[in-house]
Length: 304
Image 1 (cartoon, one colour):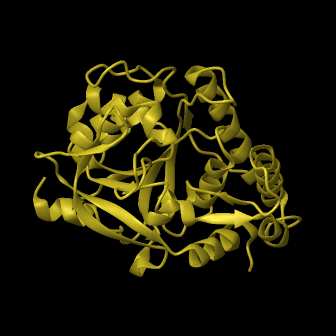
Image 2 (image 1 turned 120 degrees about the vertical axis):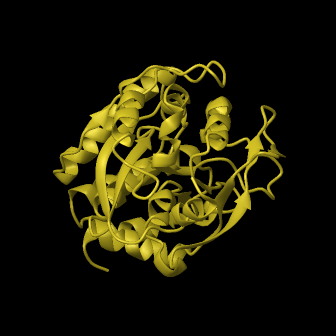
């Protein structure tokens, strides 16, 4: 891939594009918002496939159950939205090392699907969980790197004191594979950047509650989740993953600001290190919270 083509693919796409979403949908409510936002943005985004990603926290007994629960939740959101998109089960575990893939239907579908695209007309892969599925596909078929653009919500900001972030720390090997793969890569860091994209209980109740079945489900689930994990009544909840979808819709920098950086690799002790062989990547450094939230509300509720 020429540097000119790489930089073009690292720019917000013009016109309608094809998207595959990789998501740990049952992990937190932000994935459901992101999936709904993607499917409600048909003016520009054509959702071709959805991959269930593994996760392991208090909501699962291990990465395999996390993936299975995410698969079921994807189906639930599709049902609520009366949408029909191909869904594939992903990895049952994380990468054992940087050279060994984890077999899954999701990885195999991405390989097959990506081969029908090109650097000039890439498939945009939006990843909002541990990036095991995509890394596995690239290990098995490194040649697809030029045919895709990876947009990942993961890691923390470079100025933050560490990068001990949920999506990244679950599978650091996978994150390193992605960043070394040569695929055009867009990073939306969590703490220090996307952490500003929050929503409050009064906003949820005003903008979403009672508007439609999907909006009710998102509002109710967010409030219930927030009140489990917060000790204060004045909470806001970050809906992180919406921003990864929004980057594809970021015409004229309306939702966020970004710049081209040299790739820095995450280390296994949760920091970044310079990659002397790293390709240019796009790094998002600011979210325009109010404008993006307004678009999210309009897409899901249909009015604002």
